[in-house]
Image 1 (tube, helix red, strand yellow):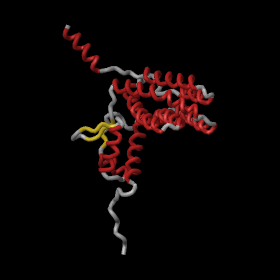
Image 2: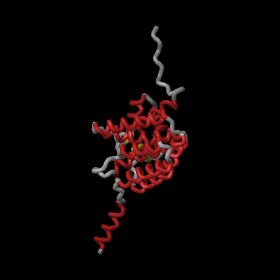
Image 3: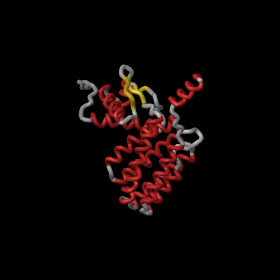
Length: 235
């Protein structure tokens, strides 16, 4: 007699399933496959990952806590749309923590880590040469995450993962179309400074790099336009 099929259970691997959903959504955002404002239907995501709506809802709530997803009452979850003010805060936060992260990375430098960073730079260059914009965006974020992993500071790593995902949305919304998202040249200079154990140079390169990314964004506040228009029409 054939055994009866059991109903789908979320049992022991609940956290694994939630993590898979979170990581899948985050990866899609990093690669600009999910655009700001995209609706994240619980049923559809559940079908994709073979998970219940409860698990999908848990994953989306965690992403909302990280500022990557917005949950609107009676409407559902959507990929976040950061404002220009949000963008400035994100890059201010990155400028505060990433120089310290790179300090720790210099302390942890080893031939094995330098090899990993060099391999990553090679992947970035290959993606750039073949014109693979999605891979370039993903690899750019992964470079910064790799530096944080190298630092060995788990708290900073957690913060930075969230900031990188938010940065990806910000770049997608506000990057000027005639500028690269995050060139490999600065990454190579950061790696050189780390390899030489030069903390001052590593910090300076990281700050310069983050300033350059932010400078390439068109962070124009729509409210400013409305105010000027009112002034003109009311004159």
